[in-house]
Image 1 (tube, rainbow over the protein chains, first blue to last red):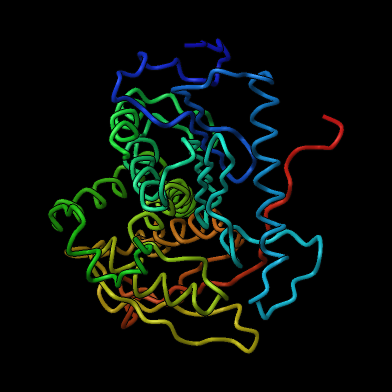
Image 2: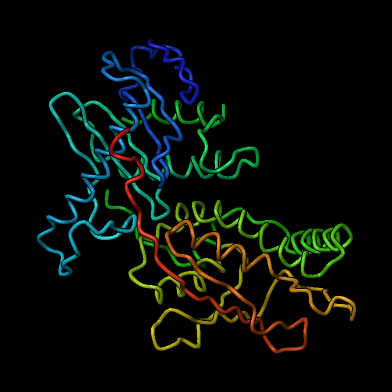
Length: 169
Length: 186
């Protein structure tokens, strides 16, 4: 299991058991593009160093959201091209799948983006992501020692999250 | 499984963990008393309460969004309704009403008949300039700022000063959409 050593990355959890995690990794970003949280459980290939990886991920999502909203055939409103949309407005994508992984995405109207990368045969993870958002609220937002907008370093959040992700079928 | 639609304030209030109302009121009273002792100037205390409210609001918004599953409000009118009906109900257990919309739809009043923060409270003459519930204006301002709305929240009526209800004026200054934060050359 690779250990990045970057200051904003949480250390990797112990190696998964045979039944183990089928999730590869998870990111949490806030509305300003700061990567609040990154955790990996199973990521054999690293192509970029952590800051570039986070920027790439954030940029990808930002563009995808914008693209999916503009291409919406059912939307009556013709937004101006290039005008940034408010988070949560219009239609927004919730996952994409390739032959090797599935990326699931949730964005709250407050701009918190939760990304979970799992194996490709995973079902709809929207409710799981909502549950993870609830975990974020309970363990991070309500934690008085946590300053909003900074990387998350809460042990309790890490352990609860690991347990929960392990249980996602 | 389809996502759960937004739940009404009552349903959420029933499911959420609650704290004893008197404990809450007395704790808030103790905070205000301590601020008055430490800061002495009523204006300073008002500002400090607003700042505390702001710090609460920026965190409260996530809890609100997570528990109530409301999606993005289409316009400010809907936002005000959601704050009054779902937000106040969920966190304070009271329902507020929204009145006095101006012509553009950017300014409204939220009226609270009943306010748990002020049970047992009377303002003495020396502190007549104090906005006892100023924390609420900070909370609304902070929460709305995290959903891209810059607002200004002021008190129009305050029962502790002799009026018949609590009225907060919420004015939308501007919507601040999300911008791509990284500069292209980085």
